Length: 212
Image (tube, rainbow, N blue to C red; front, top):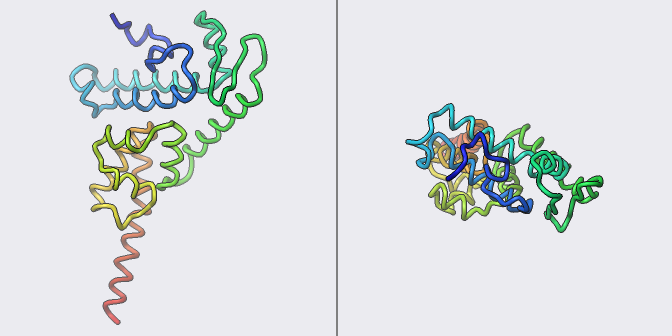
């Protein structure tokens, strides 16, 4: 019988073994989190909105700890796990030593990515970086959202001409962002601002051309 979410450790929350690799954690996080979104059919009749939000916070906290080699080492000690080997690029952390330079580099890179995601505008290239950081294939996003791959590629390539009407494009961008666990409202607002600018500029050019 599954333990209540309050009693689960970080590994159990992300449905991972305690020796999970960094890439496994990156793949598991958005999939587990997506299952507890308010719109998810999986929780529609099981959890209320407040409970779903609490679970998402637990999932986020688990992810933050487990992707950081040093934080994970301390957490494993706290819950009584034996020293683990955390393989991102065949790097390891020993329980009685400082993190190796590769692990420090990975943690630093992840923090820089988090900072990048927390600031600035969102375009297709930034969405693609966020997706790749999490180790998610575009095909998997298509499976989860049921959005045609052609549109997902167009979103990442900022190929606005190949995208449908704004109301549909906004929905696609929102679903994409939600699936990779970034703020869907902020991403959609940012992406659609540029989308509308490009569309307006194109209409203006057509109008000027027709008057000549």
